[in-house]
Image (tube, rainbow, N blue to C red; front, side, top):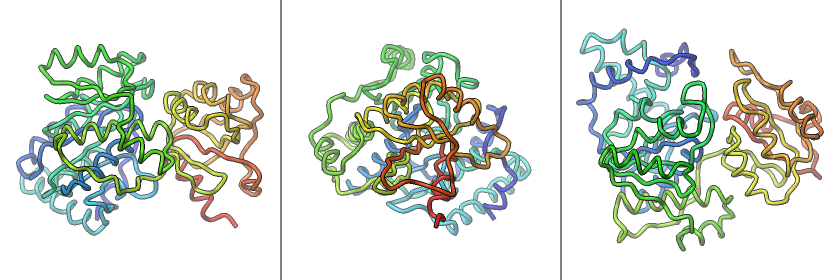
Length: 386
């Protein structure tokens, strides 16, 4: 049902019709019994910040739903409710209900014209029905993103960096602005947000109350980060989530830290000598660099051709022993393997094609860094290797 519905929809679009989703949402919004959502917007750290926030709210006794994207292995990973990934059976039921709403209005064909991400976002209105709190992660944008249509109780802004420049703008200020324009009446902003003055300006224009998370870790966060060996950037994401949770439920609320981040691909230790991370831009690379300290690694990497390959490699070069280009099927999107090799040469880094027949050497350390598609394909290879 749902899988068949999504089957012929591309995940990536060169052009996006920004008028289509508001029209679709207006048709069915009165069918959604959702509370105002917590909207997580930014370039990097949205997934882990949102999941940390959902876990904190759940630990405080709330029924919580979390929508994140993209997924690593299966579409249903995008929907998390009360501690569990939502089953395909539940998603199929939600899909049938949602499609039925449009059919009743004589808008079935219009519903079928919606994009992959638009339909996924609309499903939240049904999947998270009955939740006390709903955390929605924006896609690549902010003000024009489908998730921005939902009524917000709090906007959460994670760090911004240069990414998706062809759609969001070529400067950090342009990108920050399109994200900040999704700001609701109340907002919290990461201590690492690069355009603090712009956030204050947008808040002033909108009459919003904006607060900045502290750069110093809360005691509870520092203890958790130490006991769980969190990477520095994940500790900061947890700090922002904790700050946001107190804005949602109040500072007097008792929050439990008895949880483990159940979101794969975030500095995930897959083996004793292997870590994978779904960061895919220079800003994310810099966060990973800080976490690796002086450790030397073999970097397993590749990227789509429109990504800043040179910036990523230049950022990670101090900890890279050798670059290994991992090739995989990328559909219609061109991979930048040759650019990776050239950028490595310019930086004086040894570079070779990743040899899937040889695999990983037990005596070497590896970092797999790149898009969800890269990490997914690498982990599939890793699981089926002999």
